[in-house]
Image (cartoon, rainbow, N blue to C red):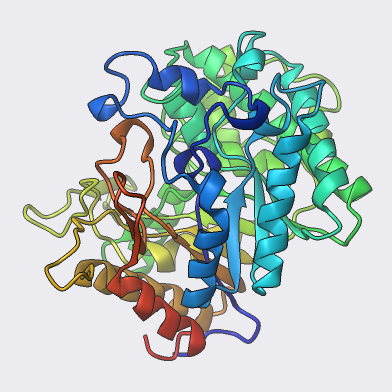
Length: 450
């Protein structure tokens, strides 16, 4: 099952999760630096202060990416390393680090796909209100301008934000992630609105100032409902569930994507939240809704639903004892068929899977290798489902495996391993897992071996 010509095969990682160098060369504090210093916030008291030491080992890591044959690498930039206070004074050493990564990637013929914000929000700006402050949109635009001025002669692929559902939902509603807030839902909606404004302003800056023609997209969580059968009623139920705003939480697609792509908030959400809507000023939705070139989806799992005779939709529980990753997430390959299909039908933008992968119970075996057959099986099943979606007419541009290397998994610390490269955190030794060699064959064959 070969994938389309010019389909992009890549892998991804995020700055705070791999870099370390928490105070190196003038870097400012992020909300995650502060979160990790608080007791009982991160498993094992782990922090990102060293992580994979990618800050000092990026050349070695990029060589491994080249050995695997990556065509593209989705990286995020460290906002507080570039602007220690979030705005204002630029840290030249932070930009030199970004230059070093971009140049090394290009030397190895790996295309950089840049995410501007993957959760390491500058602590200095959080202390001024963070995403609750409307000025956050302008702060983010200023940061974007600095990055575009420096890197857009070499970078053409851009995503402003990674997973706003998570950095708002987990960071500002449940308090599980930095900055650890438990806000009212009206405040959550305000934070979402300001983050969407920031996205729109960043796209405006990139479009206006990029030195090379840009390709700009999203990196949104894909919340996927899967039909219990192929009956049209079940498919319709799964579609409506995938595209619904179902409660006072962030776990949906349309509250985030509709404003970005369609220029308005979804009607069902408006009806549900009408008494607590954020302050939407004239021109806000026009600013938010900027032309995008692709819809980036991060998909790991899904839920199965069926239609009932009364028109309701029932969620079917996952079977007891069914396959699960070490994140305790169910293995649902069909999510990579139905998610791209339903999203493409609604928004008519080419799909890029910007994250997909699994946490596995990995260790170095007696032969010195890391054997992870579960991950290979997982990825094969999901990619086959994605391939079926493409065969059925979904326009798709690429796939980014999460993640290229084991790393700091946020509140779970180093207890979860998502990488296709194993990291011994005591020695920083890297070992390619079996899945890395398998993925190399997938890339060479353009998916033919799946």
